[in-house]
Amino acid sequence: MRSGDLNNTVDNTNCNWSSGKDAHQSEAPLLPMSCNHCLLVAASEPKDSGQTGPGVADDTTRQQGDLGNNIGLQDVVFIIQSQKYSYHADKAHQLRENIRQQAQDIQQEPPTVVVLHEEWKGRGAWTIFPFLPKISQTFGQRAAWVFFCEDDTAVKLLPLLHVLRKYDAKKELFLGRALVDQEATIIHHFAFHQNPGSFSYPDFSAGWALSAPLLNSLAKRWSEESHQGEFTIDLKHEIAMYIYNSGKGVRLTDVPQFCAGPQNDKDKCVTAFPTELPRCGDPVSEEAVFFAVKTCEKYHKDRVPVVKKTWGKQARHITYYSDKEDSTIPTVTTGVPNTERGHCGKAYAIIKQFDTKEDLKKMDWLVIADDDTLLSVPRLLRVLSCYDPSTPIFLGERYGYGLTRGEDSGYAYITGGGGMVFSRAGVRKLLSSSCGCPKDDSPDDMILGMCSEMTGVHLVHSQLFHQARPADYSKGYLSHQPPVSFHKHWNTDPYKVYNKYLLTDREKNKHTEL
Image 1 (cartoon, one colour):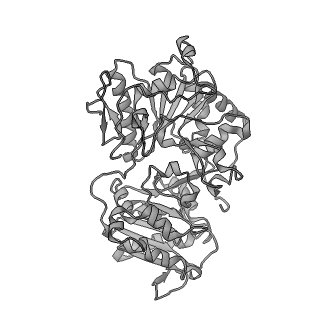
Image 2 (cartoon, helix red, strand yellow):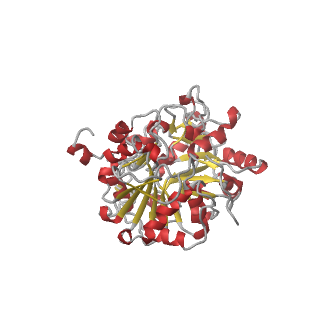
Image 3 (cartoon, helix red, strand yellow):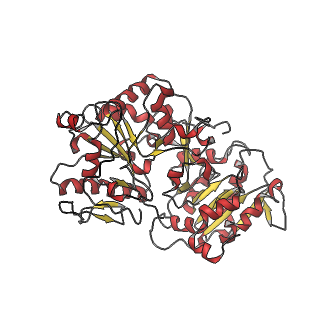
């Protein structure tokens, strides 16, 4: 570490840079009324990337000392995109304390740090959109920048400030680590289908920032518009699209110093994000997890064999639920007729069986997967070690419906294709309510999300679960993930996907191919 650097180290518990001290689409139903190792980066001013362009201040501008560039810590507001569940709330609190400690170490007043779910308690707070006016009203006149990050993002405070000073905060600017699509994708509504790589959106894991003029402009526009029952699928892309405003708005400015994933030049980074699974103790026992695969006779010969040859071999307790019994698999029936879509009746039958069947009562976790879901069982067991099955939670990739209509409108849900994980306590709380399927073919994941909102079950998001194929996600986004799941066999080889993305090193050492 060079002379003059802050005495910073990496805190592998919180994934923060610490000071060396303890840092304490079917029709949508309507709703009735950690971390391990981080990048070790010296806490010095990052190297100048040499970036120029709109909003990038040159040395002459910086010497003029206007607020646009001569900003201090008090001119930056940090908003941690947090979750209510205790594991994630604790990480957000640790990050907040780490930022404050870094400020104390350089003898400055700490900046404002907001834990999102505590400051704005509406069910749609995580979507950011409906709270833009409140964020603007609270901070838009006294801050130069609002910097958003996740609870696992590591922030190097003083170097981050140096980077922000390179940009003119009096202009409408949108900063982040740029991601681009590999191909036109359904999760982004096939936007820019003729040239998917022409549009960039921020990697939330690396942090992203709005200048105050842009924040205030977005808040004003949002307040003046009407908002219907839109879906929230990939928030980072949707935010970038809203800011872009069909070409009338602002594009993302790529900031190389905002980092996530493997880096060739770590010294430049002012943020980082863990690239390994969280470690919260030993992985959950294989005996504690029951896997339920939803299938039907139509897919007994093509999809089911993929499961059996890949992740199904890793699952100690697994059952294939179908509309027809087939002893060669074997499958069991739920008594619910097969439906072309939705599958709510089948999902609820599985959940009820998990609650009542004697040999399943000893298990802590229920995982419901589609027959074209691909999973890494060892990684899932590691992730589950961070959660308590005696608390009511549903875990997976979070989508939303109707949340942008207002602070308490709509609901979030765990997408079925990426795998839905239910704690024992979550199942009991769900079944103790009157909430259930309006019809057998109602969308199971959305109904379960609606019911979780009504019953008070914690709905926990993990970016390691994926509703779509690897090709549907940016390579940069996947670069800092040990993924737990992907979904769909369409236009892809599921065996190759499993081998490349989901087979752990330990499994690869046992066999080189399926």
